[in-house]
Image 1 (cartoon, rainbow, N blue to C red):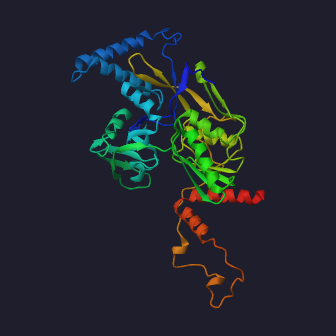
Image 2 (cartoon, one colour):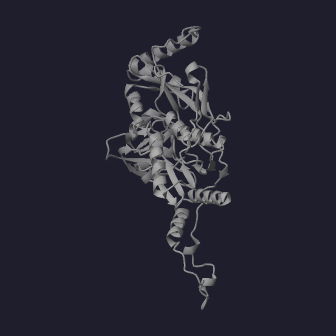
Length: 437
């Protein structure tokens, strides 16, 4: 376990109104008083001379005056962004917003974004936010913000444009796969309050828990949700669906707590890197909050990082069936290193691995049962319906009192029409329950 004075987990994402980067990053913060060994050894003097020469050229010849502060900040940003999509330089304001983001309340549109080929790419919309309500989808490419093209902007610049006063509007031009023309989507900025855990009974015996992001209080919220489901069911559950679709990540400790809620023993996740503090191992405590009831975990392409930690742990420990689409594939760890000027460096320092030693980086979690994206049509609404015995004139009655199952059947139909993967998950749990009997 980590020493508190040396390192603590902050979050798996930057919440800058709309998120800035992949919210599936594992963040840790080290005491900036620690010495950095050999930091000045073997300085590349020739390259530094070239840097100084270019710096001087810009100062002297650029069409407009540029301050030293801006040039040096931009140089640092470029140095970090050139490493990978998740390393970044955070000025004091951005660093403060990062720390505040773990509370689950922030201003903006409610989308998790990254940069791809010069455009802002949506990793996932957040539940109950302007972005989700407006129909923003995972994989959308944002090419214009109001009248300004995104091409050529940094992710930080794009994020600043998308932020704004709650109630103000912004027009996004979105390119979506399968659509011939770009979409114009107007959104109204809002204060985003993310409730990370939601729960309900699908039907008697079968519970549903949706985790939309991993916050500092998610583990405790999950315990409360499971207790509420047991109370509503008047006893233990026959099965549980854990929905991690479009969950971009969150706090690492929360991902560990969620996994630990269902695993009685063994490894949950571990990380490996070059620095000593980057090597962490998390093991499960001997308890299972649903007493071994069968589980199905739903994932899709918008399930990233912390979601992949949970799915990978439950899959490797044979605790749940993973169903849906291949996940995002965010398996690197970022460390937050505060600097003396109040800013911070977000630096990729490790990769994380599932209990069996799989690296998720750029690979993702392969579901045990893959579900293709399909569009369902309700045949009962069609004019062509199959003829049953009960439809024939003068058919015999059953002879027994008809059981009242209409409500349950109606709820099942509604689940099928609105959410096919969830319907399949429930069907699988029922099948497991029947086989157990």
